[in-house]
Image 1: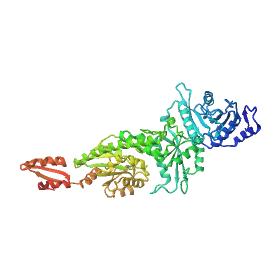
Image 2: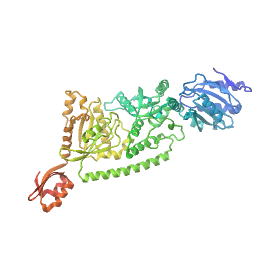
Image 3: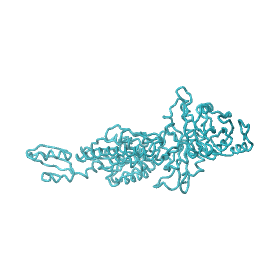
Image 4: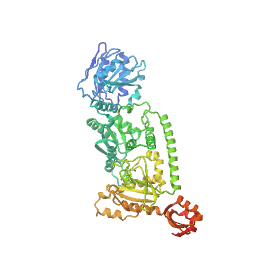
Length: 605
């Protein structure tokens, strides 16, 4: 239908013909309204001094055009009304010749009664209609009486309105309505998600795009999403505007609309411009690998230090993505990529975010000072420290529980452990040591996390011994191991003494060639942290490695030198002590450099 509806009395045919040509204009997918269409409507409105109204479908097609008076316009009926949890699929755009873009009571009433995607008003300024402003109202949910709640946004300039990610907001609102109608909470609802990877030679070390996408799916599962499909694009290099290319993005946009997708996650880090461009075309929220990992960390953080570190990483990631006056509406939906223990809304301006970053860094530095003090005390008391390192979900927390009879959270999921946990570990040679469980590493670990978790990762750097836990049941265990070594190199811990712990050995055939080859590697042990297999051998190996830093001697301390005996108790680990006729016979383990003070009393060792 290409006709002009409403009150056409007194309107020239040339004006009517010009209005008919508007049917040929297409609003780009995802945009609220194009500047060209807004200027055309403002121009005609300023000329005839009457309201003009038109309907635009979700695809950007103009379906109806009507003329009204100078303060109102009769709206045509909408066919094909959707379900209770859905909007009409049509936005109404109309002009206000008086220059005021604010929505009237009649506008809000029409918005609710017709369940428009949006009610858009253009306040036409005269004589310079190019300075016209745009406001719009949207249904944002239901109140306790199940009546529609509406909000108005604006006014925006024509240029600002072009940047509004309209389709994304509509999809968010429909999810809210759908959950409210069915009395289910959006906060706990799983989000329908697609994941996207691109093969352009960026993945090194034996990983394929398919492998990386499988790991991304596990990350999405951990975050609480439901992955319904995955897509791979092969290009020579990323597109600077759309990363995977505009054509592929448009293809994904159609799929997302057909399948009612809530979220699209990319396996690579997107630039702020790429993320914004893709969101505008697809009309769903876009996350990249970094944002997804940050969201998982936000869910896992429990201690004050962990929350501070996650918030710091999120703010550093979001800072270049702040859009100023752009419409984000993150408060409407929540979900993956919007959670966080601190200020994570993108509406926060850059200055406040920088101030917050400075405050968090100062707070983390104070926690770091306390942690350094604790390490100094342990060093003074000669308590050896051991750190568990390894790829995420390699079984580090389960191993800590088995070694120390603890019950910290351990589950078969990525990044089950975020906050470092320290427990006392008794060794076979009667020594006491400190065992620390650390956050798991992952390939392409976001640099924001490495920087934010610097104080935690210092535990690894300052440890006397590292236990590198490897899940040998994973088909890419070697590549995962290489990823761990890269992170250790990043934090300066690549030269620390290390025991390689091949975990989950019970999942491999006992007589397999791999099992035999692993058992022959130097300074390594095959175990099952879950069943306890190989734990005795591991403890023995830990004791042997720590013994290299100390010596065992038997000393005869005369009773006249009782202060020396007391000093031995303070400096080392007393293994045996007997009182004899001419003094105290003490068998002790202490650091080699401290032996000089007791050289005259050595009787054995």
